[in-house]
Image 1 (cartoon, rainbow, N blue to C red):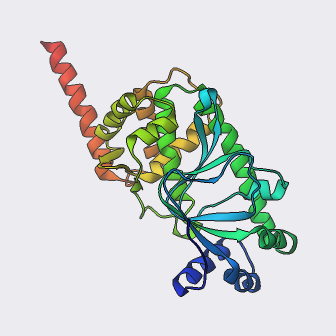
Image 2 (image 1 turned 30 degrees about the vertical axis):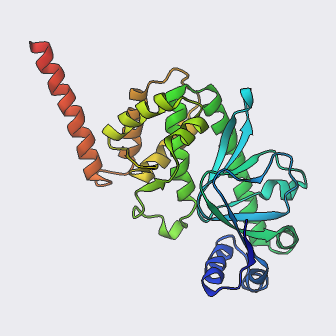
Image 3 (image 1 turned 90 degrees about the vertical axis):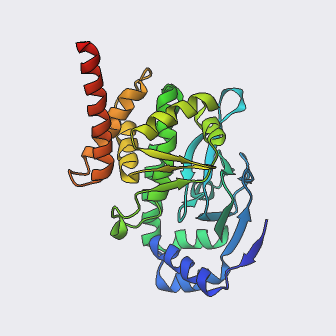
Length: 297
């Protein structure tokens, strides 16, 4: 683990952008930046174990971090996944209680840290920052309860597709409202299928089978050592609609989920991603034609 003060010009510029996004005043940004730290973690390393006393508010600079809770058999259930430019750890700092989650690095990770001293000071003296934190807490609390319900009561296909959708949402947090365009349509997940399967609570074989169906439908591409989600905005819309659903379909089939992905795609309008839609429609038409021919014979 490597820690050093953020004195480099590139890092200072990056940190300045981060602090602007969380509504720090200009004066506070200038006073806090020299005291930020950059910490490197290896894949699989725990940033904080459950019950740990949190002494800093951290922001992912590169990589992915999962906040998980243990379920039956001691397996981790990821409740939140944090991607680049996403802060985490505010709840235990505000509650002054040990963390309830296990924060684990899914990849090699670099995080920028703001010590508890500067976090507490901002909470007391920065009203815009307080409003930002309040909104963040409310959103994450709602998302946590919805995700727990889906991941605990949902069947294997739902856990896999929602598990993948979390990575698209993690990248979404990296974009501000002014740059939330369709420009970042591919989300790269540099994590092995075995790791993601374990996080989704399914076997590697079953996970691979679902990936093949999703890949044929055009929603992702499988590469060596990772997965690329296509049309990231569609994955985000799909995840939001699943969480907002009033009931969990415990016996949802993968085919039904693919239909839900198509419905999410439709929210983007007819000119959202024509290549992906044309590929999907062509596949459906081909299947329909083959079925008709088969029935004719």
